[in-house]
Image (cartoon, rainbow, N blue to C red; front, side, top):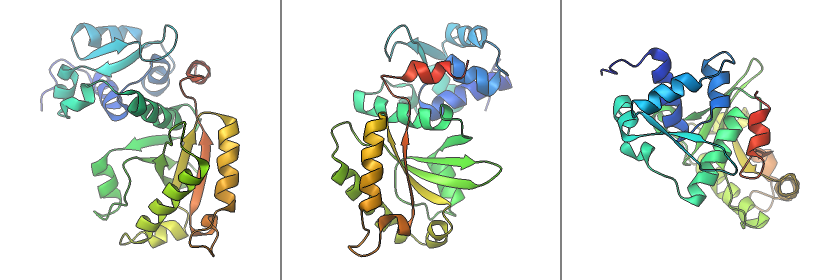
Amino acid sequence: MSFGKLSDRHRRVLAHIARYRFTFKEVLSSLYFDGADPQKTLDGLRDEGYITARKLFKGNRSAYQLEAKGAAALGVSRRRAEGLGAEALATHLAIFSFCHLKGFPRIRLEEDEVASLFDEHAPPGRYHCLERSTRSTRVFHVYVPGDGTKAADVVAMTRSHIAEVIQTPGMLPWLANLVYSHAILVESHERAELLVKAVNSATFDDRIPLREVTHVRVECVPGFNNLEEGLHALA
């Protein structure tokens, strides 16, 4: 496939935006520019019609998203260039923050990457992320409950997903060795504490504690109300 005059760095930037649906210049600076300002590159991609800047969040914050031309250059679905509804935007932001604003080496996985990683017996779930560090490697199924979702319902969804994973061929060793995990992402520390208590007290089948079946992580991530704080920490 021809990318025209796009450099390798341009392609990496576009692929990153396609993977997460949007990005910010602070994250691009950290990932691809060794801390330097990526604005010139972003302006060039925008002038050529590959990306656009949109005010998706509070204040004067610009998020960079693909245009249809950028999606075509990568050979990905035009849907990667479409706008996001409020619920989808919150979910994608939580996953973005989980991968890039928490200080861990994480990447959001595409569906074909999940299938390849699990030898075609992919576990259920729409969103997965890979964390790979010097100490361990772990795949997270990511769940972003809505603001109004009750703790009991979050636990029920988690329990249901784990039950499906157990029935998936080849997944029991992943669970037993704690390399497949369930991450619950929320914005507020108070809600995170509430969910940790709910998960810790939950059972899987009325006998076995849920946490004995698999690793469950409740993590507080930057969201709509504290995104700027998370991004400034990268500067």
